[in-house]
Amino acid sequence: MAAIEVQKELVDKIYEVIEVAKASGKIKKGTNETTKSIEKGKAKLVVIAKDISPPEITMHIPLIAEEKNVPCFQVPSKEDLGAAAGIQVGTGSVAVTQEGEAKNLIKELLIKTKQ
Image (cartoon, rainbow, N blue to C red; front, side):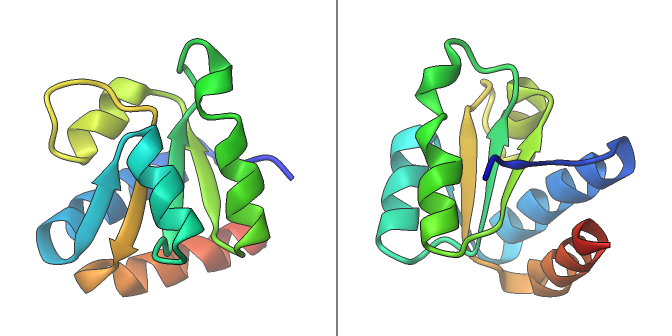
Protein backbone atom coordinates (compact mmCIF):
# COMPACT_ATOMS: atom_id res chain seq x y z
CA MET A 1 0.00 0.00 0.00
CA ALA A 2 1.29 3.42 -0.93
CA ALA A 3 0.97 6.62 1.04
CA ILE A 4 -2.51 8.12 0.97
CA GLU A 5 -2.69 10.95 -1.54
CA VAL A 6 -5.29 13.46 -0.46
CA GLN A 7 -7.34 16.25 -2.02
CA LYS A 8 -6.15 19.85 -1.72
CA GLU A 9 -8.35 20.75 1.26
CA LEU A 10 -6.98 17.81 3.25
CA VAL A 11 -3.37 18.75 2.40
CA ASP A 12 -3.87 21.98 4.38
CA LYS A 13 -5.35 19.94 7.25
CA ILE A 14 -2.23 17.71 7.25
CA TYR A 15 0.06 20.76 7.45
CA GLU A 16 -2.11 22.08 10.29
CA VAL A 17 -1.77 18.75 12.15
CA ILE A 18 2.03 19.00 11.87
CA GLU A 19 2.08 22.64 13.04
CA VAL A 20 -0.15 21.91 16.05
CA ALA A 21 1.77 18.74 16.95
CA LYS A 22 5.05 20.68 16.70
CA ALA A 23 3.73 23.36 19.06
CA SER A 24 2.00 21.11 21.62
CA GLY A 25 3.45 17.63 21.11
CA LYS A 26 6.50 16.23 19.36
CA ILE A 27 7.48 15.64 15.75
CA LYS A 28 10.48 14.08 14.03
CA LYS A 29 11.78 15.68 10.84
CA GLY A 30 13.66 14.01 8.02
CA THR A 31 13.66 10.55 6.54
CA ASN A 32 16.06 8.94 9.05
CA GLU A 33 14.24 10.30 12.11
CA THR A 34 10.86 9.37 10.60
CA THR A 35 12.03 5.84 9.82
CA LYS A 36 13.42 5.36 13.35
CA SER A 37 10.23 6.64 15.00
CA ILE A 38 8.09 4.21 12.95
CA GLU A 39 10.38 1.27 13.68
CA LYS A 40 10.39 2.06 17.41
CA GLY A 41 6.59 2.21 17.42
CA LYS A 42 6.54 5.90 18.39
CA ALA A 43 5.03 7.39 15.21
CA LYS A 44 1.30 8.20 15.33
CA LEU A 45 1.13 9.73 11.86
CA VAL A 46 3.63 10.01 9.01
CA VAL A 47 3.72 12.48 6.13
CA ILE A 48 6.00 12.24 3.08
CA ALA A 49 6.58 14.77 0.30
CA LYS A 50 5.77 13.71 -3.27
CA ASP A 51 8.36 16.00 -4.88
CA ILE A 52 11.37 14.44 -3.16
CA SER A 53 14.15 13.50 -5.56
CA PRO A 54 15.14 10.76 -6.02
CA PRO A 55 11.89 9.11 -4.86
CA GLU A 56 13.89 6.17 -3.41
CA ILE A 57 14.73 8.38 -0.42
CA THR A 58 11.22 7.97 1.04
CA MET A 59 10.00 4.86 -0.84
CA HIS A 60 10.41 2.56 2.18
CA ILE A 61 8.41 4.75 4.57
CA PRO A 62 4.85 3.81 3.45
CA LEU A 63 5.82 0.12 3.60
CA ILE A 64 7.14 0.17 7.17
CA ALA A 65 4.31 2.51 8.21
CA GLU A 66 1.79 -0.04 6.93
CA GLU A 67 3.59 -2.87 8.75
CA LYS A 68 3.32 -0.91 12.01
CA ASN A 69 -0.25 0.30 11.30
CA VAL A 70 0.77 3.96 11.15
CA PRO A 71 -1.27 6.20 8.82
CA CYS A 72 0.97 7.59 6.08
CA PHE A 73 -0.01 10.58 3.97
CA GLN A 74 1.60 12.13 0.93
CA VAL A 75 1.68 15.88 0.35
CA PRO A 76 2.82 17.63 -2.84
CA SER A 77 5.61 19.85 -1.50
CA LYS A 78 8.72 19.21 0.58
CA GLU A 79 9.08 22.99 1.08
CA ASP A 80 5.56 23.28 2.54
CA LEU A 81 6.17 20.19 4.66
CA GLY A 82 9.40 21.70 6.01
CA ALA A 83 7.64 25.00 6.72
CA ALA A 84 4.84 23.21 8.60
CA ALA A 85 7.53 21.40 10.62
CA GLY A 86 9.10 24.75 11.48
CA ILE A 87 12.32 24.45 9.51
CA GLN A 88 13.77 26.76 6.84
CA VAL A 89 14.39 23.97 4.32
CA GLY A 90 12.26 21.32 2.66
CA THR A 91 11.99 17.89 4.24
CA GLY A 92 11.13 14.53 2.71
CA SER A 93 9.13 13.31 5.68
CA VAL A 94 7.77 14.13 9.10
CA ALA A 95 6.50 11.83 11.83
CA VAL A 96 4.17 12.94 14.61
CA THR A 97 5.36 11.10 17.74
CA GLN A 98 3.24 12.90 20.33
CA GLU A 99 0.00 14.38 19.06
CA GLY A 100 -0.42 17.00 21.77
CA GLU A 101 -3.38 19.19 20.81
CA ALA A 102 -3.40 17.70 17.30
CA LYS A 103 -5.05 14.48 18.52
CA ASN A 104 -8.56 15.47 17.40
CA LEU A 105 -7.27 16.91 14.12
CA ILE A 106 -5.63 13.55 13.38
CA LYS A 107 -8.88 11.71 14.18
CA GLU A 108 -10.81 14.03 11.82
CA LEU A 109 -8.20 13.48 9.10
CA LEU A 110 -8.39 9.69 9.42
CA ILE A 111 -12.21 9.75 9.31
CA LYS A 112 -12.21 11.96 6.19
CA THR A 113 -9.71 9.78 4.34
CA LYS A 114 -11.66 6.58 5.07
CA GLN A 115 -14.82 7.96 3.43
